Length: 386
Image (cartoon, rainbow, N blue to C red; front, top):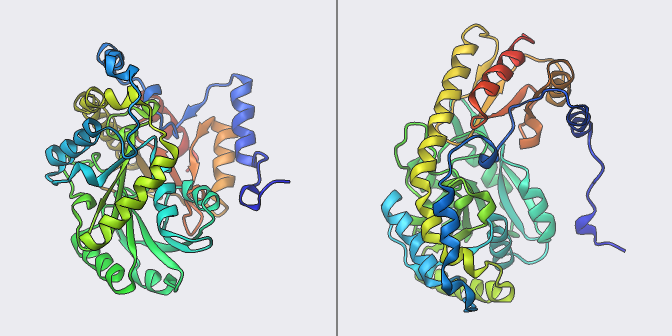
């Protein structure tokens, strides 16, 4: 009765069952995976946020496929102010989430079973999006050598006549690695030679550990490029459901791409008017929330480094940005088995590396935005295993 694209294994896996058992028992749990900023003790300007939804324009229905011009202009101002990139508001399309933006771009570029190259390690969302859009995801690899590098040979090997785009997460989740200038140049060369597009997820772009702005792919005009981001991370407002895709590149490609994306968006008209009219005030929240998150990230990472000083067999992998830390541990069994043992014995919740498609066992991923006291206590319990 149901489609093959939804033929997923829906029963809880071993790891999930143990988490559910502990939560239902009421036992204390040190959650080092929490990624919802609204549950991490940050201070929100509730008055300003709620007031933003009281605009009378919200009572008028004005369907605009790309989103209201005022909202798109606000996104363009963000890129100009925070990343020194000039974008035409006409090149921006508002969506409810980056997941929706992905689905629009996948539908634009791919016929059924066409291919998109995706990085590994990276987060597991892509598998479900690929299934739902009837496309094939083909991995390319990031290699670690005191820092993360794109394995371009794996890209070349992966390209086939059905390849339509290379997907990049910048900075990567969970590795926290940026794409350097040389890699940008090589990616553009590959895309130009093979007639491929770039799809770039930049939701963590504003969270470089050193606080300095990084160049956005929204300024890339060398090849057809779709840059995705949203308020979920930029302003720590995942509940507001505002994201976008910016389309840049050669005019001969961007114009037909935007025309087709507009038809796709017009079919759904998903983003509600009150949120679009509130966008300016919601964007403003980044100025107070981003410093709070960066301070928490730095404090937790510094605490992690200090605790690791007494455990040299455990390695914190190099990273430059993002909300996560990757630990390499001296275990001789699967990272899922280790995570389950850690839960049962110490009530500490971490993500096993295989959730993010690490190529070997012995990796765990920790959230750096977890409340500081819980983070420190959880890490100490984790390291007591060694």
